[in-house]
Amino acid sequence: MLTLYNKTNIYYEIKGNKNEITIIFLHGFMESLEIFKKISNFLSEKYKVILMDFPGHGKSTFLEKKIFSMEKSAEIVKYLLEKEKIEKAVFVGHSMGGYVALALAEKNPEVFLGLCLLHSTASSDTFERKKNRIRSIQLITENYPLFVSTSINKLLNPNKFNLLQKEFNFLKKIAISTSVGSVLSFLRGMLIRKDRRFLLKKTKFPKLYIIGIYDLILDAKKICDESKNGYKSNFINIPTGHMGPLENPNKIIKILENFIFYCIMK
Picture (cartoon, rainbow, N blue to C red):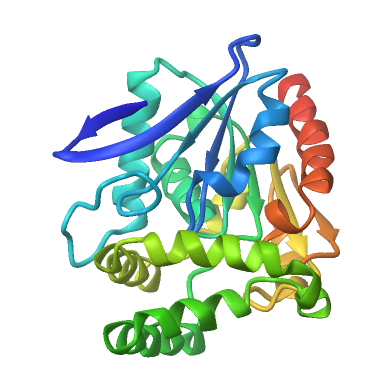
């Protein structure tokens, strides 16, 4: 399905209509809705599932902006909710998708039945992380294919990297097809994003962190500690890197099934 948003074509898909409960998946940086394919196909047998491609990612056209903030991305998600007349949903945000979901939750907490932060965090970038992003911007302008390969190398479980070549090639294909302008714009948006850990206590809906214990992007211990400071906030460790939806989708499915049930019954 293709819809128009501020002269930008935003591609999204709706699967399943058997239940009034809606699950919304938000992908990460240099990804697309395709990373949730197996998970969404399974959950759509029980629920309505909505997936979207952020501007310049997947099948969505990029709106030329120097900085695409998490707040601007959240506005697109809100627009989609209004267009499809979705009053409440369970949100699953992978990495950058979690940052966007939190930006949405700050202004529109009433639309959340629950939030799963899948390999994501409510914290802003550390000083070191910001420096890394600035270096990445330089590398992208000089050698985008090298940036893609270097970045994806860090996403998968390093202990099983040789067994995850199919997943590596899948991620690389998606990343290479992502607009370079979009990559730069969203990278700058993540660089300046605000710290939203205060929302963990302020919001009343259930929150779940799914944490990869072999994640090279986010420190598992720090994310565990972060999750303990929230209201109705829990965490689950899984034996993956940063890409649980591809490394172990069956595990993610089981966890989400239980979390969605909890959100509905709370």
